[in-house]
Image (cartoon, rainbow, N blue to C red; front, side):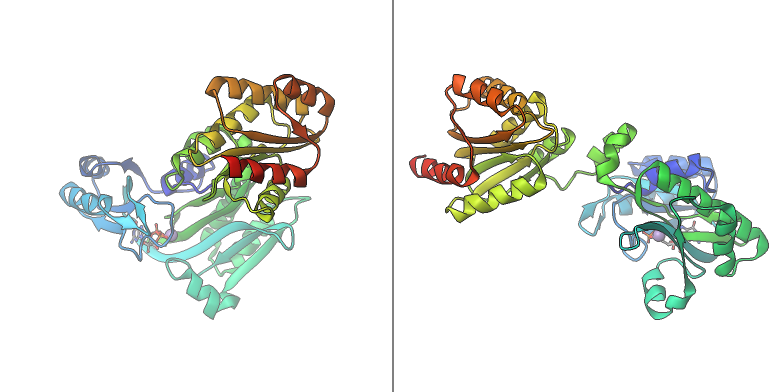
Length: 380
Ligand code: GDP
Ligand code: MN
C-alpha cells in the first residue's frame, strides 16, 4: 500500500523527522487559508500516489494567499499520470541549498533491509544512480542487531556531510529504520532531504509503502488502504475491504478456492476442459463460514457467472465451516446458479454430510469436477 505524501509525513512527524509546517487542502479557498495562516511563501503539491510530480508540473510555488488560491485551483484540476488530483499539500516554502537522498528498502536477494543514501538527490536521482553509481552509498542492515547509531553516522559521513548535518541526517536515518520496522515497510524514502541555506536539514518529500500482507497488523491504516482503491472495480473493492483476493475475468464460470496455487490450478483445469472463468476468489487460509459466505456473494454478484465451481483443499480451513457458509449464502441470495463442489481435507466427512443433506453433490477430484462444470455450462 502506498501512502500519500501528507499521510507519510504524519508518520514521519511522530518519529521526530524535521518537516515544514503546512496542511492539506481540497479546495483553492482552503489552500489560500493555509497560506494565510503560514504567512509566508508556500509550495503547493498534488497529493497523488505517484512520484515525479515536480516534473509533471504538480509542485508549484506561491508568494501570497491569493496566488496560492490560483495555483491550488490549477493543480486541483490536473491529472498526474492518469490520477485525478483530489488534494494538495500546502507547506511553507523552504530555502533549499542542496538536496540529498535517503531511503530504506528490502533487498529480497540478500534478505536484508538496505539503506540507500546519496549526496545528490532530488528529481534526477534515477539518472545519478545510472550515470554515477559510485555516488550512491549502500548499507545492509543486519536483522539480528538492527541499525546502530554509529552505522547511521557512518552512512551520513560516507555521503560527505559536514559534522552538524551528519548528526541530524544520522538521526533521520535511524528514525526511518524505526518506521521501517514498526510499519512493515517495503520502501520508505526522503527525496529530497534538503539542506537549507541556514544549514538545517529537513524532509521535503516523504514516501512510505507498507507491505499489503502486513496490513492486518495495522488496523489504523485500513481506512487509508481503502482510500487508495480508486482503480478497482466495485466488486474488487468490496473484496479488498473483506480481506479477500478477488479478480474479474471475461468468461462465465465463477471460481472459489483456497490458496493462490489451488485457485490458479482450478482456473487452468476449467480452461483445459473448454470452460472460461468469469472471476475468482481466494478464500485464503482458515476460511470461516462468514468469509465463505462473503466470497460466494461476491462471485455470484457478477451477472456473467453461469456456473459456480468451489474447489477447497482443506488444511487449516475446515470443510464443515465452508459448507455452513455455502448453505447460508445460497439461502440468503436465493441463488439458482448451478454449482459444483470439490472438497477434501479437514472435516471432509462432516462437510459432505452437510452439503448432501441440502442436495448438493460433493466431488473428490478436480478433473471430473471441472468436466462437470463445463457440462453444466452447455446446459446453462
Ligand atoms: P516529486 O517530484 O513528486 O518527488 O515531488 P517533491 O516533493 O520531491 O518536489 C519536487 C521538487 O520540488 C523537489 O525536488 C524540490 O527541488 C522542489 N521543492 C519542493 N518543495 C520545495 C520548497 O519548499 N522549496 C524549494 N526551493 N523547492 C522545493
Ligand atoms: Mn520527491
